[in-house]
Length: 247
Length: 98
Image 1 (cartoon, rainbow over the protein chains, first blue to last red):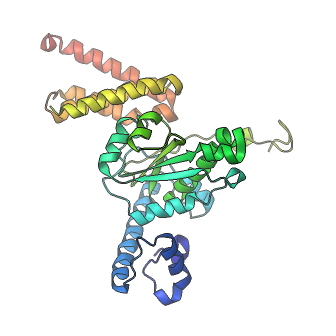
Image 2 (tube, rainbow over the protein chains, first blue to last red):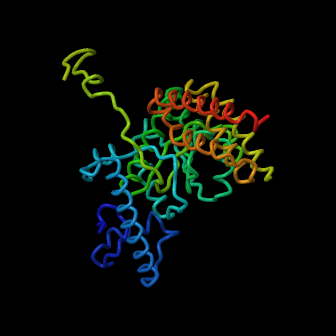
Image 3 (spheres, rainbow over the protein chains, first blue to last red):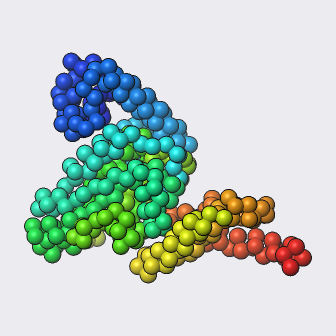
């Protein structure tokens, strides 16, 4: 059973005992939260079922990937994440997608500009259009998120550094938040930079000062991934100065 | 045949060509291989290709094509292997294809 503290959603628990969480959910997702208790119960049931199924699936895939000993610490989630390029034909519930954006907007931001915008795409026709001009987007994901940045705003607040560098760092950190929370939820992702910005901007009607920076595909994995090589920590870490204090 | 699928493939290929100017070198061979996969899928869906040997080769490509991002040697080995397969296929079936 997934607990309410982990996900900040009403996972079938009694309303009166988790009022704080209820309030927060209502604030963030007021267009989705069902006020009627009866309907809410259905929602809770569906959500509970979703989490149970997909955490189990995720666990099985991890077992196959040789990761069965992992627990749930942040480091474990970081290590479990894989770029997925084959998805099941199953939509991700809207509330989960919004949770991912909630994680994204809490990423650090240079000068606190928060230059980001997120376009959640769950319309199959639009995904298909974007897909044609995104050679890096693989595996027919049921959902994608386009992370954009407002370069004009970034320039006005943080100058050239803000526009050309901080923006990229900000959206990258937001993207990592999305991918880690997704992993924790039993979802799978892949960051995609190989897409034609010009074409995607036209398809999605982006204003000219908005830069389409990164696509994240989201869904449920339909592949078994291998553990990628990582350069050893000893080879990339120094203490105090370059080449100093090797581990 | 669904013309739209072919047009989508053209758009994919031209987008890939543009992307290859700025992207990592290894993405070039990958995009060509991926285009073959996409073209094969269209032909298969329209019953325009039914050769079992080709199906096996495509399966091999599908299995290893993403290794270009994690293990370049494995990707190159797959390409060499697939070339051997095509040589064998075209020689063994020389009369059939003439």
